Amino acid sequence: MFKDTPAGRELVKYLAGPEAAKIWVQRGGFSSPNKNVPEDAYPDEITRST
Image 1 (cartoon, rainbow, N blue to C red):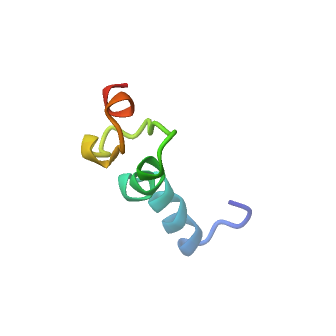
Image 2: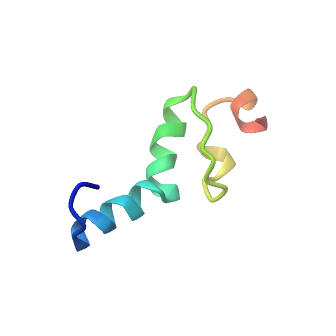
Image 3: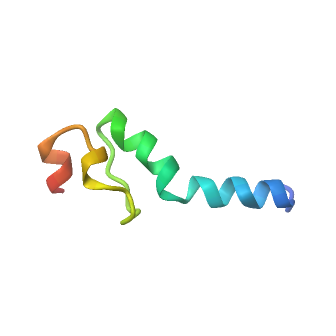
């Protein structure tokens, strides 16, 4: 974040949350460090198990 604003803080908060991570994991090839992303969001068994 280059400028500390309420909108910027909210964006960073969203990007660090499970909603944003779920979008990436559904595309495959990505494991999220966010423990709140549900296992069923991962597209295949191998990614779910890791």
